Amino acid sequence: MNALERTLINGLQGGFPICERPYLAVAERLGLTEEAVIEGLRGLLDQGILSRFGPLYHAERMGGALSLAALAVPEADFERVVAEVNAFPEVAHNYARDHALNMWFVLATEKPERKAEVIAGIEAATGLKVHDMPKLAEYYVGLRLEV
Image (tube, rainbow, N blue to C red; front, side, top):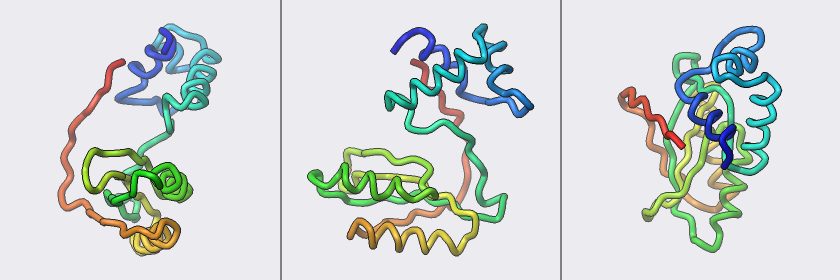
């Protein structure tokens, strides 16, 4: 990872401007050009260093549903199942864990009833049971991962 990539990752955690030219605003804040910010982010995504760059919405406040879900995936099938799960646009992110439930992901749907449909779709696509763990309470952690 180069210095620009580190600057972008460290500088973009904790807020992204909502304005007409947000990449320019970020560039000015970080002492970069707008093009460097856009190309740097594209490079991070292309290299797979970032799997996603985009907003996080509070789905429930917008009338939708949000849930943490997990699967017990046979190790030999892990990459195939990752692709099948990530094909659902309602999957916000997906990661491996060292646990019997070794794949965890977040579901965010526009309508509450859509969550059950997505879970059923993932179970049909993967042949695996989705363990749905809906949010009971919300806590703010404020996690930052400096690189």
